[in-house]
Length: 248
Image (cartoon, rainbow, N blue to C red; front, side):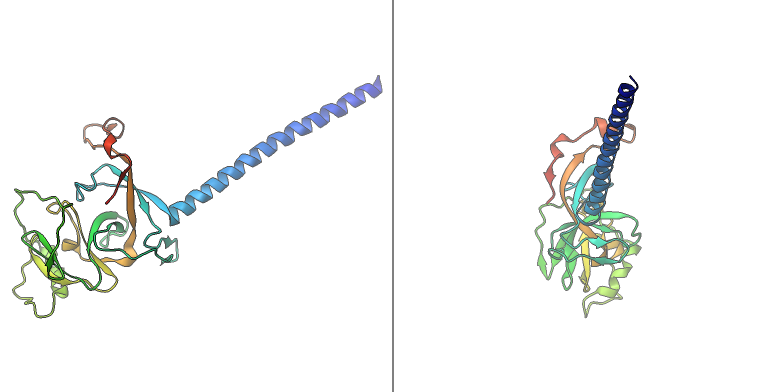
């Protein structure tokens, strides 16, 4: 009998060890999955794709306030965290590209605009029409506000330093719809909002350095119409038709 009890106790101990080992292996397995998933998320967010929310109407009707975008960070060379350097770019930003960048006045903020001038371009505006390298640019994506009068602004004074050679600085009085011609410096871009009469852009605060460009929006993955009086507007006011829309 004693021999039987001894064997039974030994079998129970082995069974308990198996169960304990099985539980431990289960938790180790899932811990590895969680760690690898988090690492992949950090790497993808840092170097590949990142989410971005549109917080103003400066790009209507291309992008709307309340749009959530996925940004391709690899196309212009993703920044390497903590180094101030970038990975090699697929290609440089081009005229007409919609880009997300760190706001030059306050790099903690992200802005989205359209590039209308690249290094070496001469850009100007005449009665609301963009002129690049002395040729009017057809912009079918631009929205104008018919009743919005042209306005001058003290913020435009920075432009005098970039006027083309021969332009009179003393008689230069730029306004929102009439300014330039300006020469875009090396490593800089001139950006404008598609909602042309209601956009804070390069006309007011200057060029965007290439080091500040973060990526290119590729798709709208969620969208809702903001409502100041509705705290749950992000759940109740979805723009279903914009889900999955490609950004052009």
